[in-house]
Amino acid sequence: MKKNIFNKYLLLAGMVSVVTFTGCRKETPADKVTGQAANNGKTMVGFPTGMENTTFFDPFTNIKTIDVFSIKKDAKNNADLMKANNFVVTLLPDAINKYNENNDTEYELLPSSLYTVVTSPDLVISSNTYTFKFASGDFQKTFTIKLDGSKMDLSKTYALPYKITNADGVDIHAASKDTLYAIYSVKNAYDGKYTLAGTIQRFVDDVADTDLGGTYGDDVTSTVATIAPNANTFEIFWASGGGVGGIAGLQLAVDPATNKVTVTATGNATLKNTAGADNYYDPDAKTFHLAFDWGADIHNKRIANITLKYSGSR
Image (cartoon, rainbow, N blue to C red; front, side):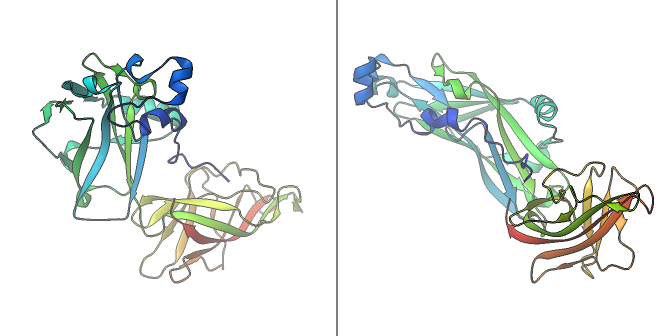
């Protein structure tokens, strides 16, 4: 119901022409109509896999080889394909701050201590700049790192921002002129999409609000996102479908020894497990059983008795 901020592919439609290009552009019937035949176009360079690429990992402690991005040359004809080029891509650490401001996120630059760049003869590295040497006939190179899972913090989401800063006289594809973001997050065992069921009630002066409260309908989903090895944020809604205010930072923490769950909200100190209720996680059914409440006093309570059943990865 709520859009997951990790899954924004804002430029996917704009990237279609990059994704589909081959090493040398072919003339099509449409080219004949528009006059943009293969030899009349422009040779372009771009990122064929999109400008925002999010990878979620299951917890790991070894070294993983990760393809961060590819850079591809779309030659207008065979003669341009045979030309050598040096394309420069630059790591832009400060771009993380702009991304966080625009997207209400708290991503961190992936520290260089967590990864090493896979080197090759056609990659020249100088500080934060990477020069990809395209020999005659080359049309795509891949930038790859080795990521150390033992050093990653499960409470953090990391990002690496890159931009093409020198196209060696070739046009940069319109959809690849901005910054590319490679985003990485490690999931704990509870992370994923869940089906939300049960009831939620809102009382005002001891009177139940039937407009907002009630029983959840079918197909209501909640995102359970990792913030620590045994803690996650999650979402609830009113039975009417609207968002619930006043409980920012809604979290659940699992005691791995007992599977007992504690529900809290960083933005509301009154939110707590309902007294006498059994809050727990069933690992066999991959289901949370939660009962919690909050409110200014006993006459103005909000009460949730819900289950969260795992429905797939996010």
